[in-house]
Image (tube, rainbow, N blue to C red; front, side, top):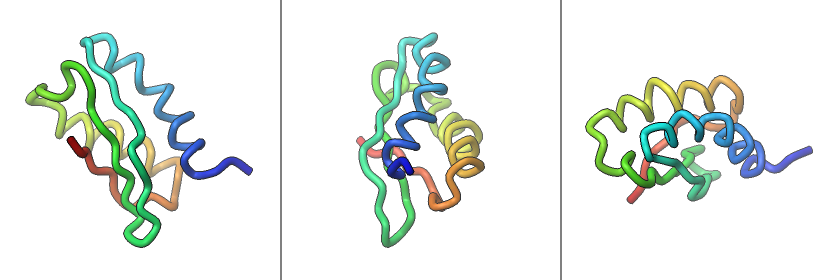
Length: 78
């Protein structure tokens, strides 16, 4: 069975092309076991995009939570 980190990275690969269309990207930072929080980092234009919070909650978080039940929340870190 794949590790949680590998499962997250694999799923994020399916999302990255959409972010890259606007010169942005996203990367896995870490998963905190105690809080079940996944930390990701926006890159490129996503770092300063005014819609990045909406992208995180309505897109990335919703997509990952539906597929990886161990995750309770996704947060963006600098």
